Image (cartoon, rainbow, N blue to C red; front, side, top):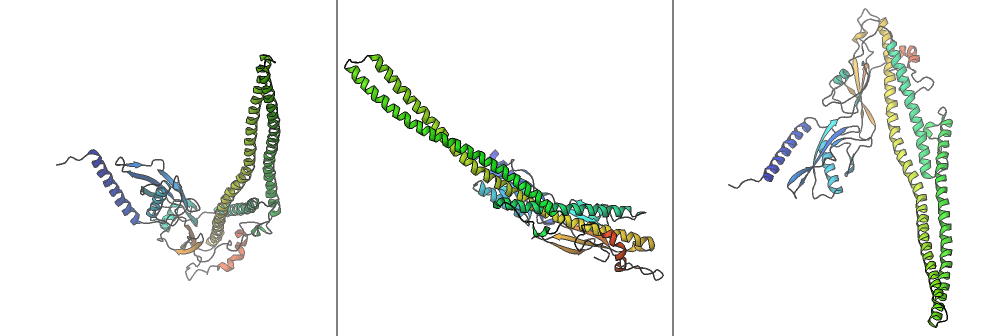
Length: 461
């Protein structure tokens, strides 16, 4: 019987381990498959089969945890940006393997082990003890989300809790609105700088907003300062260009004069050599003229070296001017990309603050009703999920306690005011009748009254 070599045994063992890993990964993936979304974190491991030495080699430099950015991409060394949003882990692993094979010019695809290290978060708001952002877990339902948010909001002796929430929601809303206003103005300024314009117009979304002219003046002043800085750098490069240009002209003229001196010295040397051969001039005269010729030729070499150096400096100065402009455009484009992403985040912050404000105003009203009428604790809870679509928009889903959640879901927990009362109890005021008494508490934005939709939510969801 032929003896099995050590390398063959190692290869067989490695293939067995790989097969088991694939089977385990298949079973886990099919238990609950998720499409990846921004903020998901994935753990990556890359292994390549090297036929040259018959072994598997791990690409430890690429191993680690990567986060999907807001644009839906995964940035991996060598592979570059790989689109991840909407893909499963298997699809993303195949895309990474293809990118690595193409970029590294491999004979085949490397083996990719990819798993979700941490899901994107969910958000819980409404009548829960601790609204906020929480990590998503597989098989998470609405009731589990309520549980990790501290459970349903419990009754307190006074309304200070609701008033505090209203004030906090108002502050969060104002902050988000002001942040988005600043970002939109900065976006307009950066676009104007990239286009080479001297000024910019106030965005249509900000027309009529308070202090918008002052904000534009600040951005315009920054724009002028940046232009002055760039112009000073360009002017310094122009001065250097003129200096090197003058050196080139001066050295060119000196070289021309020096060549004429060398020609005269050479003629003189030829005459002295002729006279020496006839015995009419001493050898010392010949040595003196010969030294003169050598010195003139040495000076010419020095001048030509200086001319070459000056021309190199002139070329570098010209390139410096181009690099100054290109560098500014590149920095502006990078800043503009960051501002665009920040504007999207600010819009989400505004939406979350609005929902929190609605709930704060509604809870305050419910506390007043409860103080007057028994049986309010029997109110039915209702749930809504705000879920992000693939195109970046959102949709609202009416849910129940067992509705499954996905990463990035916003879970809103509310209370139905269509309460069931006993025949002996008076009918509770309708939401329309209570609206006038709660209008003051619903204005969470103060003087900057928000758009429709911010009013307290008093009806069924």
